[in-house]
Amino acid sequence: MTAIRIEPGWRLPERLASPESVYLDRRRLLSAFGLGALTAGLGSAWPAAAAARAADRARISEPALGERYAELFPAERNPTYALGGRRTTPEGAAAGYNNFYEFTTDKERVWELAQGHPVDPWSIRVTGLVKKPRTLGLEELFKLFPLEERLYRFRCVERWAMQVPWTGFPLRRLIERLEPLSSASHVRFVSILDKSRLPGQTAYAWYPWPYYEALRLDEAMHDLAFVALGVYGHALPMQHGAPWRLAIPWKYGYKGPKSVVEIEFVDREPGTFWNEASPTEYGFFSNVNPDRPHPRWSQAAERDIGTGESRPTLLYNGYAAEVGELYTGREF
Ligand code: MTE
Image 1 (tube, rainbow, N blue to C red):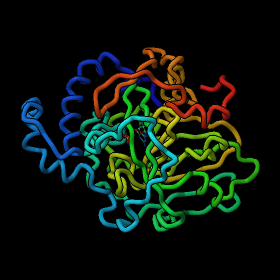
Image 2 (tube, protein in one colour):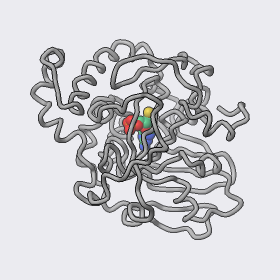
Image 3 (cartoon, rainbow, N blue to C red):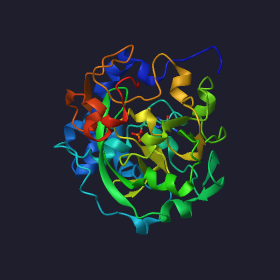
Image 4 (cartoon, rainbow, N blue to C red):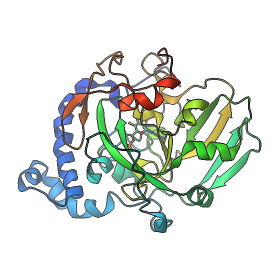
């Protein structure tokens, strides 16, 4: 990393303050994609959208893999994972407001810039402290385990939140299959690196590309840690991290790396992308915690991107009963 450092989007609460009303207008509009209705008032609040919306509606949720593996979706919903009274976020809202810095830091443009990014073939290197280093392909990833749908709460460190139906399988099942050595204590996930196709990796050259994240092995083996291959009943569109990403619902969203190409087992706590980029602001564990403010903003409340409503942040994003025992209270 160079000494020059530009603030990531979520480090600019003032910037979020005014665009938030703008994005919520667009989000309401996009929400209409999910609800199948659009009011004239919202259309005129975003005139360009009126012309774009028919095309957007078709393209915004398109799986990056096209028809490949379409027969595996929708998977049966597992009723164990409910939202505690919250409503599922409309698809257009979740699909039109993303963090995927490899493409752009402009959340509303990610989906468009990510269109057409190639994800097939795709290989995942399995390295480090593992019985047999190997490479996994898409066929194995999609066919190894039965797929299920889970409704998960999602909370970004920037304070926006949503409720999403992910399709996939527990990460634990994959880890068991990969057979880490008993000396492995943590698992790293590395996202794609491709400067020729991912403009953010050149435009934001000060970041320690490629994106990488990690979990302690007991966290990764927790039933809630999920390999997501699909969302809203179909394979992932690129902006959500096709062909696969992690969904770790009790942690801030950045702990869910997208478009992963390497899984590495290691014997100590590894560095992470955001911790390396800004060590005083982003810790390793990054569990959602209303009582632990970000150095520059409170985490006491969050805003639902589907409804625009504010509500109190929940400890571990509402999963304290499930994951609380993993922590002594000193991990952040
Ligand atoms: N993974 C990669 N490779 N690159 C990213 O920029 N952003 C993270 C996470 N995974 C990111 C990533 C952040 S900050 C968030 S909040 C979530 O992805 C956003 O997921 P979504 O866009 O599917 O809602």
